[in-house]
Image (tube, rainbow, N blue to C red; front, side, top):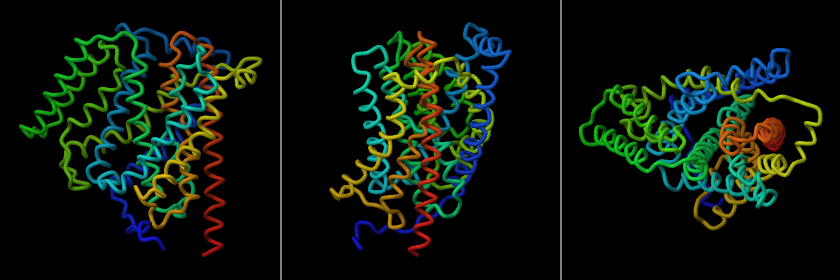
Length: 395
């Protein structure tokens, strides 16, 4: 066996196991609330149901409050998870981090190229970021259904590359999906962030209260800057004190991450699903699936994800840049890429930003996302079912 491919068995931390459990439950709940939302949107009260999310409160629609407000808390949790991975998780060892980094880069570039090739210089070109996303909750939900037959290294690999994928989506949102830009508000937001980092690094303030207050101020300033307000969630996560002692319940970052798991999984994401998956199914809806935008989304998620993840990981390992964990095979990596095609939450989120002036385009894109994500989930489940059965026979 090639020495470069040998790694010690992974022992999953209590924090990781709690995160895994909450994410898999969230995936199941998201499916239920999505079905409820679609049924309500196409029922006798469909018009009233869709209109509910457009009711304005304090100057913003409910949908806006959910997508720019509640989802900031979701991205705060993503940031805390990314911080944990960087300090004590899979990304803390640069050699180990390289494989999921290459997976994430390939998993973003290949779908983007597929979408771009079909929508170049067209009104739907702005949807290039839609198939680049990965939904952690659904991907882990599928792995959870497969039980102990899934190697621990694969769970960590999927989480690591999906979190990096989400970080890429945040960068994408900040750079390409910014409407009206205000430099003064952005500088003010960065100043607040700098103060929070100073409280952490210089004065070692361990109370969460000043960080939460600063985070709300930073969110408001980021909203006014024109850059999507959810970026403030990621920024706040890296300003909150973190302890390198894994599972240290005294660390503000650990405490906040632990506190947010259930509210995000069982309240925020289901509400997001209700507000954003009310897709009206009308006559001729299947024709919309043949549009270049829908094809770019579908092919990007179903074909582009496993192709990009598998190819980039293979090239990186063959070049000696990183290594494959000893308990994983290339079929595992391809299967992870297939599950990466479950875009759902992040893909829908980017869709709303990409086509703010076209309800029809958003509706068609969401339908493509749902069908592609469902297909990726089913294909991934079947893939690993067959893989584990084959492995059991060969053992």
